[in-house]
Image (cartoon, rainbow, N blue to C red):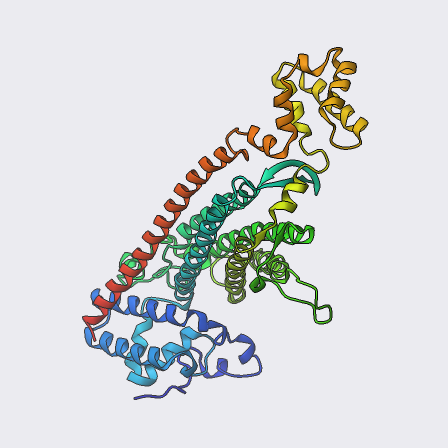
Length: 486
């Protein structure tokens, strides 16, 4: 029997229609978890048959129907409140009342929680894969610019010279932490709620560990009430996405400012022109990256607002929760690729960067540090350099510094420091080379950092491969188990 327009098998007549029907329905939005629901159904039906809760024949009929439903696609499902009801209705429409056995020993409460976790795992791993690729691109670009001097800023004011490699690797390191937060969220996301039923378990002798194995979950959400109630996995994922978005927004903002100052030129693929001013080359993609962060942070706010104060177990408010996480992860995953792509394909204007690197007497700290290394108290050195800058109304010469030393130290500067060393740290490249403490911008120091960063990146890649292999192994186990009945 085939009847994709079968009447709902979940709601009795008095609950099956009326003006609120469309308001209640999430079927259209549930297209995202259509494949997840089919996987959860298959794992559950296999377990029911293995535990002899339903017969092998009934399991085979149900599993055959699920194959047909998968081939027909989400668009062919009968009208229903959600994808879970629609699939069950479609199964019964094909095999008759026997199809209703697929829902034995479970509720839509644990079913939907399992589907959300199943699908969100894929999205989180997709985001991690994109971020890992972006970090690799940043490290490659940084390796090419370890000696490209550029101005560094605090409060958007010239501060100290640094290098393009040092700046790029600062964002790679931030993205490494974003990767770790996504992987941490994945670890708690990847637990099975299936078998919790409505919230109080079931009298059937179900094997929750078996369904977790067939779905690739690494353990259970043990307490049945917690299993159907918990949406903290959405919160963690959305918070990690919002944090990633914040990192990307900073990267994009710097890119916009550097383009404005003529320090870099974006590739045409990441820019646009004005509709009326033909000379313009606008960093529109980077501006949209900044805007995308609003999607993720608003999603986190919306999610927390939905969850705040809900009583325990399942509440229909939760129907509105998952979209915040999915939209946030989609938004920042795309933004990652665009933001890093824009900055790693940009042409760095080395002459402009070098010219600006010493602006605003940015090497002042290097001079003060040199004096302090020679034994001058740092605050005295700070006072000397500040007075010399005031006298010169900008970057002082060695002569101006020498004159100032006479008044502050009562001796010429040459009596305190080597003049050649002083001339080196007054030069932006020399100042950068002197800053060779771990994490500093000196070319060799940055080179060592890039090696360590590559090791961390390789570890994250390995973790990603392990997670993908685990899910693929579960998929194969599930297919094998299903083949025993169809």
